[in-house]
Amino acid sequence: GKRSKSKGMTSLHFRGEKTYKSEPVPLIHANPHDFSSFFSDNEVRSLILNGDREDSIEILPQSEVSDKIFDLWIKQSQIVGGLHPSLNDDVVFRVNTGTINFSGLKIKSNSLIGVKYLEESDESNDTIKPEYQLVFIKDSPIVKGPRVLVWIYNQLTGSNKPTKDGTEKEQTVRAFSRFSYEATPDGKSFVFSVQSKLEVIVEFPSLLLKIMPVSKEKAEEQGSASVLKAMGKDIEAVLPKVRKYYLKTFE
Image (cartoon, rainbow, N blue to C red; front, top):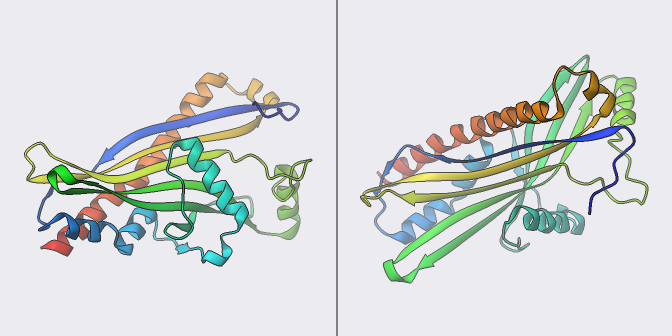
């Protein structure tokens, strides 16, 4: 059902969906099993997660993956169409997704991203199709700056307050990426591919929207374009790195 609107707030939806492909890569691994061990290499996983940033990514120790986080991971996977995560094989990463600076405040965003690795084998032509599924679980802004500013920020955004019935606020970001590969028609090369979709829902003061020079639709269109651009910047940085790592591994 629809969640109740906070008074005087409007939901803006920004969406982006796109498939990205690397430059063709000469197929130089000897057999499918070599390819699957390349794909499941932790280095490849780190390259995929790190995008355009040199920032930190770290695996959340299993002891820190609370039931709450795991349940949210399951819920987010269902919403975006990903497979059910498993605590034994799949991992949660904490990724620093950038810093926003304004008027003395530094807001760092840390996201938790669930990473699932899977392989589909096709007996008929002896191929293995490896794939990573990345699901955005939640983000947690870390606010630094003068104490009074941090306090005001928290009051304004309700950052540290649960909702009335004690539940967490509904997640406002949905993101899902599938990292795999596709053979080219001649069978001599292939491309690494990333299918990504991202949706961001922003609660925006209705009054502010009324005095802005754009309609709600136009604002959503502009915001969606900017979401797609940000998404593309990261993924387009990833693909050449993975391609290079493949060539280095098998040459």
